[in-house]
Image (cartoon, rainbow, N blue to C red; front, side, top):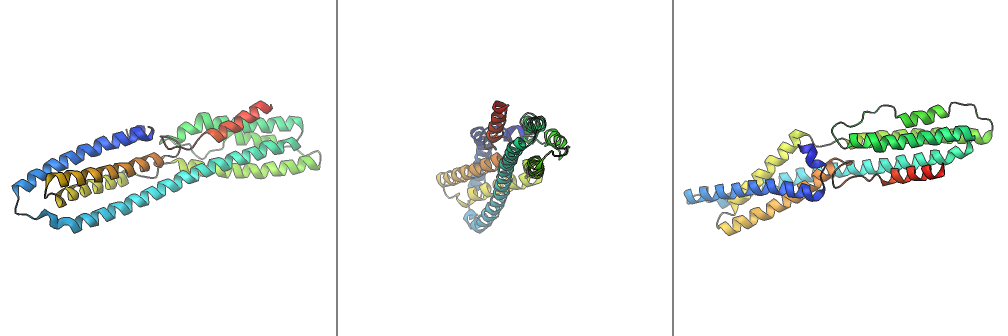
Amino acid sequence: MFEFIQAQTSGIIFLFVLSIAASIAGAVLLTTRMIVKRHVDIPFSAIVPAVLSTGLITSLLLGFVFQRAWESFDVASKSLNQEVIHLGHIASASSFLSDEHSAKVLEGVKIHIRHVLDTEWQQMATDRGPALTRAPGLAAVKAALMFTPADEGERVGKQFIMSALSEAATARSNRIRASHALIAAALWLTITTLCILLIIGIAFATSVTFATSALSVTLSTLAITCILTIIIGFDRPFSGGVAVSKEPMQELLGFLSREK
């Protein structure tokens, strides 16, 4: 279920989180009003320090989680761009090889890109992330280089391609590692619990009048909804409304397809 939510656009994620948060906030408001009316002699405003500490802990946790999610997204994006750059270098350096070997290298690059777009991308967008197995396209490029260079130009071209191939494989590994969700179920449970406790505390601390309590809880709920929407959107770099773009890979594939 949660995987399905993560795959939606930012707007849908926001509305989904808001609907749950609003339901919880409404239940909290009604419950606190009933308790306050029954126990009018209890000064609930005295729990303000506890609310502040809960809010601080929640803010620190949300900030830490967001930082990790953003770093993972950044690594995924940079790794994809680096992979595309090295694949482009391989394609360019293939011009130093004979027509036969050049065609095999270019075909291997195109096989790799198609494999990423058609197979790995869908896997990276789910919990079934691709394992760090040998990529068929990169393996095809490596196999195409199993020849003895006929001249100095082929030798230099082969060495350059081997180096770029190693860099592309490293970038692919980093991309796959960054595709996995960082936030475990236990952490989501902790975040949810702290947010609910914070809303409850705010409702009691501002329970002097219903209008004050309702406004405070509403603003807090909206703030929590916004940050949770961002975190959920960034948790999986290759799915959802905030996702790494396929465009660099698609552009390189289109260019290579036009060339040959």
